Length: 355
Image 1 (tube, rainbow, N blue to C red):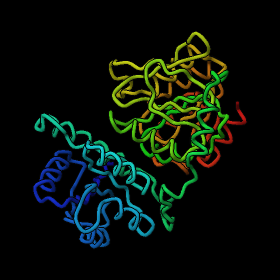
Image 2 (image 1 turned 45 degrees about the vertical axis):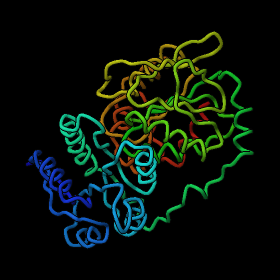
Image 3 (image 1 turned 60 degrees about the horizontal axis):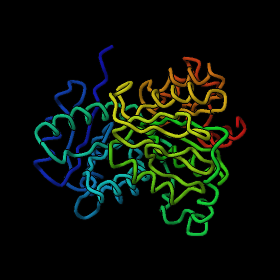
C-alpha cells in the first residue's frame, strides 16, 4: 500500500511565508499543500471546501489571532493544527494558549542564523505535520473553552503551596509526555493534592517554552510547579519540569533525592529525554517510584519505564482512546514497562492508589 498523502492547509498573513512553508512542506513527497489562507476567515472557508488533514497556523495574524481562531474552530470542526510560533516571550505565551485551545504541536521560527534555522524548522515542521495527521482531536467536538483565568488559584493557595513544599519526598512520581502532552499534563497535575509526593516531568519542548509552561501550570494547580534547576531537591508538593534543551536525571542527595540538569547529547532523539530521566529514576529511586507515560509520538522512555518496573516501581500509561498520539504509551505498555493502560481522567487517581 502506498504511503498516505497528508493534505495541508497553510494559514499565514504573509504571502512570502505561505510560499516558503508550501515549498518546504512539499519537499516531502508524502505531503501536499492543498490550499493557503491569509487570515482565519479565509481559512474557515478553505477548511470547509478542502477538508485538509492538517493546518499550519501562524500565531499572530490580523483580524483574529490564531488562538481566538482555534477556540472557535475546534468545537465545530476539530482538525489537527501545528502552530508556527515566534520565540519571543509573547510568542511563547500565545503558543501555550494555542495548545490549550486545541493545537496538537508547534514549531518555533528561527531567531538567528535564519538560513540554517529555516531548514531545521522546515524539517521539524514536516515531521510534526505527519505526526499531527495521525492525531486524535475528536474530543474537541462541541467542547466549551474554559479560560485559564477561570481555574481556581490565587495567593492563598500559593502561600499554602510553599509551606507544603518543604518536606523531602519519600517517594517520587516520574511522568513522560510529548505530542498532546501539554494539555494532558495540565489535567493530570491539576488533579494532584497539595501534599502530593515530589514529581519530575519530561515534556518534549524547546528551550524557553518549558519555563512559561511550568509557570502556567503553577497558576492552575494546587502543587507548586516550576522549571527544574540543577540541584533542586525533590520535595512533597512540588512538580519539576525538565527544561528544554537540557537533560534531567534524578540523583541521590544528602537527604532524599535531587535533580541534575545538564548539557548532554540527545537521547532517543530528544533533549530532555524521558528515557534518560526514567533510567535515572530506576537506578537511584527504585521501588520508591511510580511512573506514568502520557500521549506522545515514538518510543522515548519505553525502555526507561521498563527499567523502572524491573527495579520495583509501579507504572501506568495513558490509554489509546484519550491519547492525542498513542505512541509512547503503546511502546511502554508493549515492552512491559506499563502495567496497564488508563484513561487520562483517571491517571492522577490511579497514581495515588499506586503510591
